[in-house]
Length: 83
Image 1 (cartoon, rainbow, N blue to C red):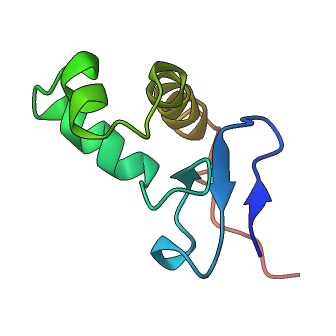
Image 2: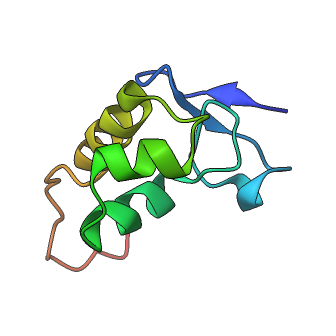
């Protein structure tokens, strides 16, 4: 069962595809793969030529999703008290 992310319309999750990892529009293209290609130096235009099913907005939304997922969160360093 595919669901769309509540905040990112192009990000989908489906346990039957890519082990449930966040993907682009139900395609078997995980967000992590897009980030990996960009990190390796591949340009957006090169990616669009290599995978014509992708759209520029897909790649930009993958970046936005990654940024959102990595937002700073406060984590208590105090041990939980046993009550």
